[in-house]
Length: 608
Image 1 (cartoon, rainbow, N blue to C red):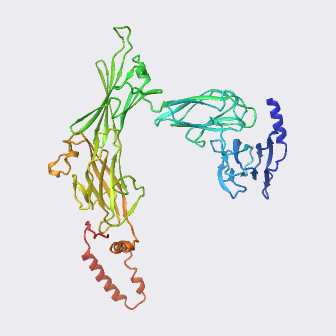
Image 2: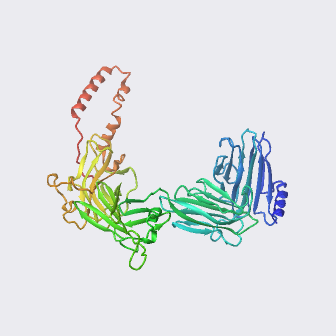
Image 3: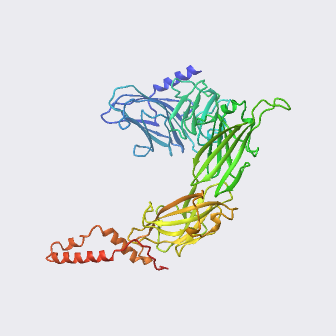
């Protein structure tokens, strides 16, 4: 049957192009050597082999009268290996000419299998070759399809740590004219190991007809790891946390397809254990070989809360929330420590004895100085192993539209009117519900580095600006509002910086509970929970004559024209009053020097 199919295909390859594949020859160029193979059952699909010479410029237009789209697949192509993409390429256009929208360009150095789909019933292909004399072969397979129809179990998204998938109808014959894409995504920090347990699709030296393509990334252009067909059982390993698998079939010779499975592999090399802490969880990675050295396995592990289970791959991965899984919080000396314990229970040799060591892994996350410090104690009877690392709090500051703090402002820079009320929120991202955010100091500056001048809105928890209002403590949010202003002798940009403290809500003696305290009455030197948040720029709206900000516009005009002191002089450069103008200029300059002031906060009249 296979031999008969190949003879039929070769016979069709000798037939000239049919009506729906129109070949046009560019003037002054050699003709393109093209043959068209088709199916005796339907005209809805074609196989096209191109044997190209140098200096070719060929164009084909594929047109289907019915309301269908076209999918074209360049499953195998061999162009000038050293030819630049500008002078030798294949272009595909979404329409009936090369003036239509460009779907994509194929060059010799592409490391993926190009596939294009039209948005209508017409598609145009143009191939241009350079002057180098070398063998060029392009195999194209295209077919017409209805974009609204789909094949069951043909592709999908897989995001579990491990899983399996098969071709449609497996182990029965796969469907014809199928193009299925599976996207595999695992947790950040992991790689993917893909194992094909069974593949049986049409065999070909270059896998032109039916093929499976595996890409090292999240799309079909991420980098081709392999193109396989026939009867093989390959294995692939990604370099990141995503992998893409494609099954493409033509119209003949359908076999049982494939069956595949995948697992997550932790990318970092962990010799024994590794602990990291963040705002909402602690994460412990344990090497399986380390456990095996004590004749343990993952079934022997147990947290304070035994219902919390790890993720198992080539490592054992516990992701422990700070407010769950038996985690214990301790507030002491202005710091908070979260502790949990992994117990390794030995398997008893009999009802009364064991020959395995009793191990405990004590996990501690201490939050301090705009960071988190991780400490881990591994005890083997009398042996203690310590590890430590550093992390940071996850905080942010944003402007909101109103006092409900429901909708954040995404514009940057944010343009405002003078005296407009601005609503600011500092957010802490953590799973611990018993923490509160306290605004210790918030100040403004016309520059992002907060060099002089600066203006305090809040200082030591005390309001410094009469338009400023601080909202009561609200769990993970610190909130305040103030009216917009500008700095004198400065452009209209304002940046905000807030120093915040994070406290336990149950500690009524904490700095957060004290509120406004003068600097002489407080001591933050031992306070470990503090961090900074910055936002900006906030800029004043210009060219708003309706708002009555004429004084502000005059100020901006002076700033923008100050670098052109002789612009008025040019108007009188050919007059006899030049000497008088020089005298006037000196007087004006002296006047401005006398009037110059330092940077100050200028209180503005209410414009409402």
